Length: 133
Image 1 (cartoon, rainbow, N blue to C red):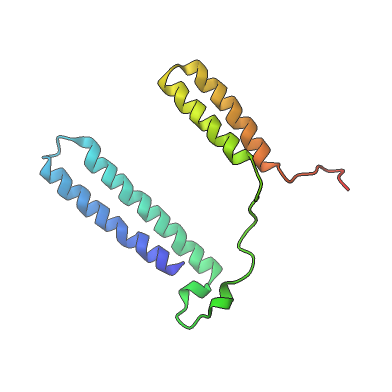
Image 2 (cartoon, rainbow, N blue to C red):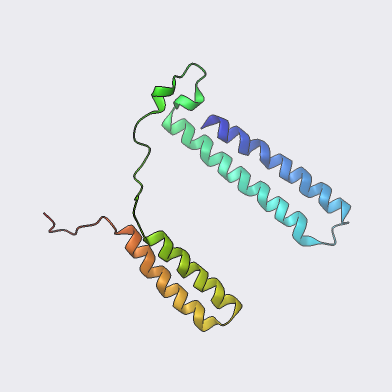
């Protein structure tokens, strides 16, 4: 993760520099542009710090070494549900929520309710309970 940490750590001063140049070009009259660039630089710094901290804790991965072989990165990368419908339900709930922001707030409350149901369904999809056999 050291490569990713360096990448994001180098993006931080770039965004700060671009934000400052943008501020001078608009004579600091348009506050959204340079502020957004400064916040993007801060976000890149936070991500870079997290990745550097995690790289120290986890150690070297095969992707970080020049002498690594392809087979060293093989194995299980995580657990992904191949036939889960809950992400689609959550996306429809988010679309309903955004529709509620545009049309009427009463639709937003329906979207929030659907989103809560979808999140609980997705998190507990493989849960069989305390007394499962």
